[in-house]
Length: 529
Image 1 (cartoon, rainbow, N blue to C red):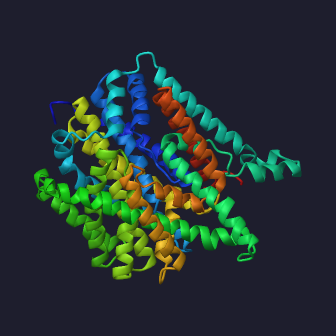
Image 2 (cartoon, rainbow, N blue to C red; image 1 turned 60 degrees about the vertical axis):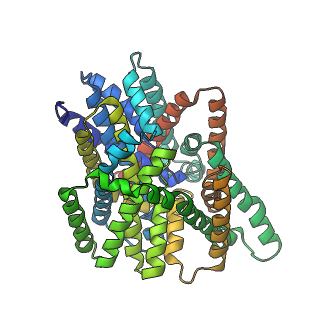
Image 3 (cartoon, helix red, strand yellow; image 1 turned 90 degrees about the vertical axis):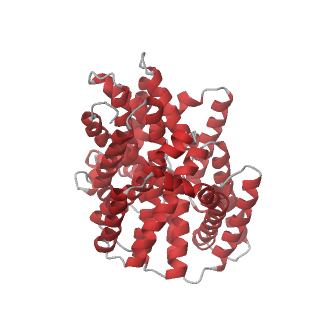
């Protein structure tokens, strides 16, 4: 334990923060199709909290931050996959989502922790956000500037969300029918009036938001006008459903395959031998066996599905941890799609089991990347890794406890709509429901595959994924995302990236948290909506 006292207080407070991070990450992620590394945001918040309770220990701050940040990536793994079940007209219980979240999260940790020494200590992979969080904690916030900046942004985002929905919160006070009509149009949950796409676009950056916007522009200014004016389709909505959605999903699928071929497989083949050096150990091997059996009995899965889930989680957690270290991105939904494609077309599993399989793999990959970012922070600060592992487990469990209830509340509003576009889950749904693949999906997949293979050579990465998503999400989302990306480009040029990053993170946390709480309250019948 490194001679340091075990930070129970930090883990308890961090577990509560993990729940809050999961709430706002799920709300925001369903809107903009992305969950962002929460290390920097939680580092600033945890510094302020530790100071307020009379603490001065960096170890306590780091463990609290480690616990808190876990909720964001666990939420990401669930929102990228589980909404597909609801969009397919099926149901999944809150208990099943709880078990999926905890199982996937623990698998990710089990497969990642033995690699900490190799990837972080020996290979010295950068893990950019983990390094940034360590720098923030190391430097401290003596004047409180960072904390004030983030809290001001958080307060503004929270107030904005509350004001946007105020007429729906208290409908009995609104007597004018015309005012009610305006409220219904402009103040609905998740309407285009939101700060999250703007702030999210800033965090995503100019390159990917441009690709996303070009996808939206191609649909609304090229595909729709041409197909309607030529008489091929009579209605714009039909074009969006029958052309842009399967075409965009196909491009995402093709890009995912290409990305896995060009980045995932080489990473694994190049460094798979390092896993043996991690001293996996009999105890962890037994834990994996227990989780495998749990998958069979808890979800009524067949042994082959459970085996694929565990093996898929192993491969994708490893690759996710490595790619996160090298490129600071964790394409967790891509990994889920790859395993899903293989399971569907080689084994033909049922719809619900396919979605649960994708969720386990996606969560494992996301938690793997999150854990390695946090372990990087801890290595720089000298935090005992055992403390951080305990923190990660606590964060997984605490966030997992609320995600099922939250997703059921969100489902009452609807996924795949302007409220919650859930773009990754839309692609998952298209894969699951495809019988013999539609020609338009195949065409999109071939285009996405070819584009990504070329883009990787010229340094554009997996921008085809963003373009494909842009094809089928509402244009009301694409425009503010692109504006946010442009602001990021300008901030980078004047070297103000980090201060605005705190602002963007605060806005998303504020609006997302209040928005999620409102949805939960409405679902619990505390509010009349």
